[in-house]
Amino acid sequence: MSRIKVKSNLGKKPLIGGTGKIVWIGRPSVAVFYALYGLLSIVVIGVFVGLEWWLGNNTSLGKIIFPTSLIVGVRVIPYPVGLLTGAVVIIAYLAKVIQLALVRARSKYVLREDGLYVDFGILNLQNTFIAPMAFSDARLKLPVSLRIVHRGTIVVDTNDGRHFRLNLIKDSLTVQSLMRRTLGHPIVRVESPSPP
Image 1 (cartoon, helix red, strand yellow):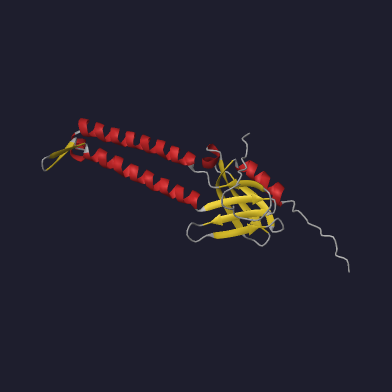
Image 2 (image 1 turned 120 degrees about the vertical axis):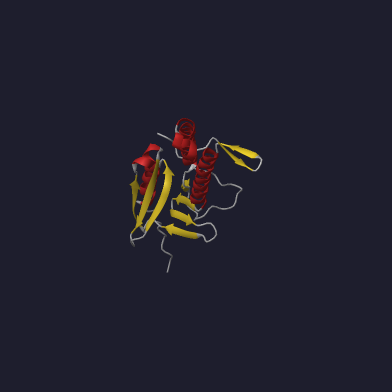
């Protein structure tokens, strides 16, 4: 079982939220998807370019559709369709990387003893506090695609019907347990009555 890291913030700008002890800090965990999409892109480029090369060299229709070279002025471009295929796949990969980076940058979650603080947004920041008294449940969604990479989505439900999605959480089962244990049992502070 993996361990949850609690980060210290001494000497840095203050973290979002209140004064309670930090139980867990998280963001969407996207690094594994960079590697998976990169590997998938390499495989797609290899398969399509290999197929285009084979068709261009071995079939008469393939020689027309997938020429082995293209002459533009005085320049000769080798395997133009293969180069175009590779460029399109690389552009699609970079678009996905940027999209995943934005998902990570716009979400931050801090679980403290006094509640859960959820930040969404980059330029227009929305900060939401979920107190233990408002907490209803933390549901875990683990589709096969996320289970393979040990990620999950936690949906935090509140008593007033709001739902907050914490996407791509690493060690999501452990985090769900921390949320239920921390928010499911609110801390009650009792003050001594002041003398009349």
